[in-house]
Image (cartoon, rainbow, N blue to C red; front, side, top):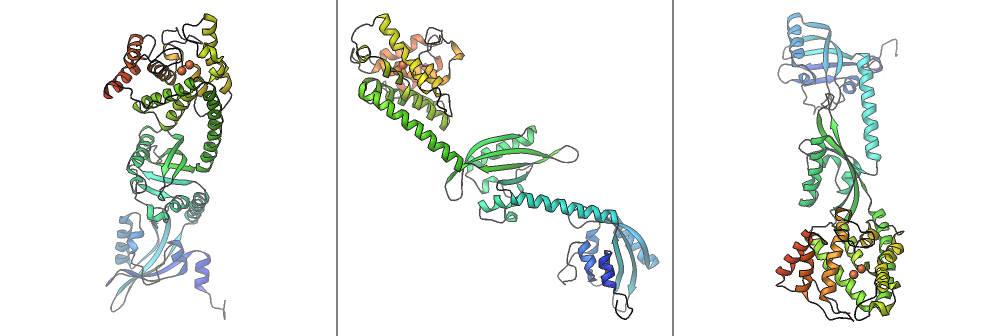
Length: 451
Ligand SMILES: [Fe+2]
Ligand SMILES: [Fe+2]
């Protein structure tokens, strides 16, 4: 207070009372607002650039029309209740408006004051605090977080997401995955989004590989959940994607170390028994072609190839003179050879692989009708990979030269498979192998490695 005068602006600010003068006649615009009103409406009205009309703040257009009618009729209104909104993202506020109509020689103004009801003010502050908390949470998260609408358009992303594309979050609004990822990858992502929004069932912890703008691949883990409105209707989805590349690289290194150790062991077998070694390599090539024909995924194919490479590793424990013995084997000798499956299983069963490697190998001599070994498994109890190994094994053995016999040829191998199709060997795999040989004009469809 100065010389007993009241500082109106200070009082108005303290009690959040907004004062304004609004030009009505020549150009509708605010010509004066105090700081309190700027704060209430969360906008700068007094910078001369503000073109927002007073009517645009009214939630109900009819309220504004009533206000004008009352002003024209009575020249003033007191405690007029108006529900105002700042923008679509913020909640509406209940306000009390008192104003008068001021006519000058050249113009017409509304002058008045506006106050937000205390309860509404607190609600708005609470909402803004919560919104700030949420923004802060999203922006601090070291994961990519994104929201999409029903058309899979991005409606919001956090800073981490935007940074990945060297953009600002607002530059991503309205875009889709097709704007950032290769076409087939984006199509898969969008199919997942649509599935989540259609079924309401979240996708949790899906591991994917994505191609980054710098053309490097990364491995990510993604969770997607639907978003509902207050009535329980799905209005979009939210996703969180975490970069797992460093972890995946570590896993990959560990995996390579294991594979290298087994490869060394396998080579040791190769030195001792080159026939079995080259046989395994050829089986791996046959199995790989079959896996590719069956559209195996990358990891599944790696597992299958590795299982084929190592499937007879257990023969390292079988005396060489039995392995290379010409003529027929005694039942004792045959039983010793059969043990290679158990030996290999015992050797690698404790090693953690991302696929059931030891089981694939363990089952490669099982036959559909239960006449195989070591567990006489039947039909669907045998893994697909083991069924592929079985077919590949027969095909390779019969088309390769052995110390105890010459190669029998591909025709005899196919005859054996055809006769056993559906009984010993998976019929669909036999069909596939026949097709592959036919496509290759009756010759082996795999590159043969000679011992
Ligand atoms: Fe074997
Ligand atoms: Fe074999």
